[in-house]
Image 1 (spheres, rainbow, N blue to C red):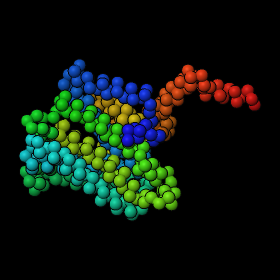
Image 2: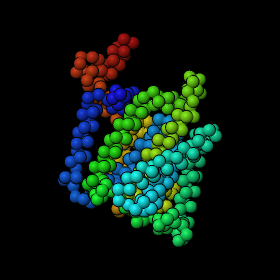
Image 3: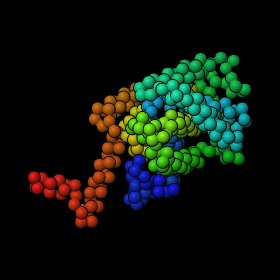
Image 4: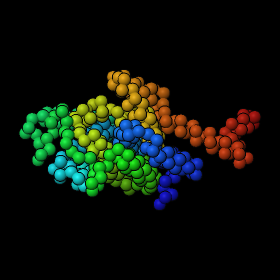
Length: 358
């Protein structure tokens, strides 16, 4: 089973890669020891959005479905967590609220995905439909300011946002601060490794085949629509995980976290990182989130302009993603060095021999 971690659908494999992975993980685990609580809280905030990026990478990069609906399911799960946590009384019930809110987001994704995929919606129209659904939800939630808009004691509050829910709690222990940070790191490791195993499995190969040539995959006997729906539900569920964790982290959620600017951000993160690889998406999204948050302190408008400029630069200069391109370059250089050390010909030596023969 663990052989799937080093499959051909993911960048990075072998002892060197996993040694670097363990080193980075160790650095992440000891970081709270040397950092103050404010920085640890900020890092927890960055990590919340990684799940959404990984979900989009699975859908767009591996499944070929460009979705602007990540914040749609982020919002569904976030509001569901708030409603459930308030109505269930908080405390340890927040863990159940977290699980149920993700399940609700996945059900919503299954319903929307069924009508789109079985309805033959694909390509750019897939993105248009998911964006439209996202904007409809954001607009609707903005109109729920009146006292009549409530579910039990939980009021939606329109653009003022829902508040008053408890953070994740186990017994009498609130999962916040350093505890939330370690919880995030553990979840990211689990999700990242699980996704690597998924995309390198037989199911992952079929998902990639449906992206490359769905007609050929159908001729081989696979029901392409079922695999596309599975990919869409898993990716949307990860966005739902981000939404529930965000609501727990800040103990509030507003429609502004669902609207057009928010919906475009995951596209920028994944495109810049390299949509066809999970590792590139993980690294690149974190770097962009860190940079975006740093610039936002001085000017939110400047940060949004920079994100737009990065997207344009990616499309024009590195369509496969800047981080993925750098990763492949480093891997090629490393493999060439190992071949030279083993006495085999390098790429440069091979090309030189070919030119001499001609």
